[in-house]
Image 1 (cartoon, rainbow, N blue to C red):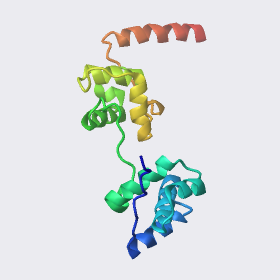
Image 2: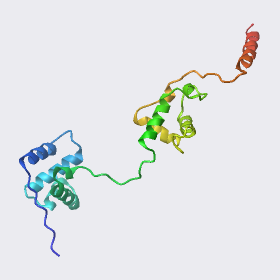
Image 3: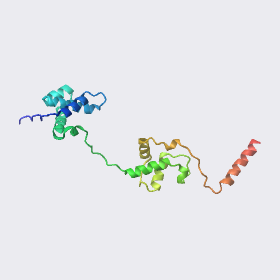
Image 4: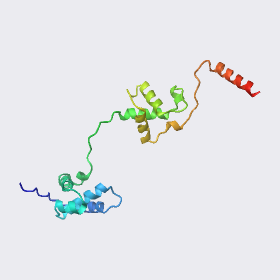
Length: 179
């Protein structure tokens, strides 16, 4: 079976200019630079094996990018979406969790002086924002926007009707000790 021939690449002046600039860029991503160099070399008529040796790549890598460029042009050199687990939470749920984290615990009726991730997870489940969420997931969601509710402390509003009586006993004991 004969070896497949490399797909011929012809560039327009605009494509050549853009790829040459990208191939010698010091600020572009390395993958983009290598892909541009592959296509520039292929446009000169170099074989896949020669391009692979020159850039220390496998022939399959050169063949892949040469083929994508031949089929799709410059758009073929961008990364494609990769498969993975679909997101578990919708953008609306994530926004509601972030909004909850930005509220003071006292505003939500929670007897806390500051939020912690386990408390936020429990509150999000209690409010029906999500059916289940872990504290580490809350931490990752908030870390994307650098939201740190645990660094903001607020006053806890006392909801105990017997607080005044209990506090009076504590303060009266302290007064006798101090005298």
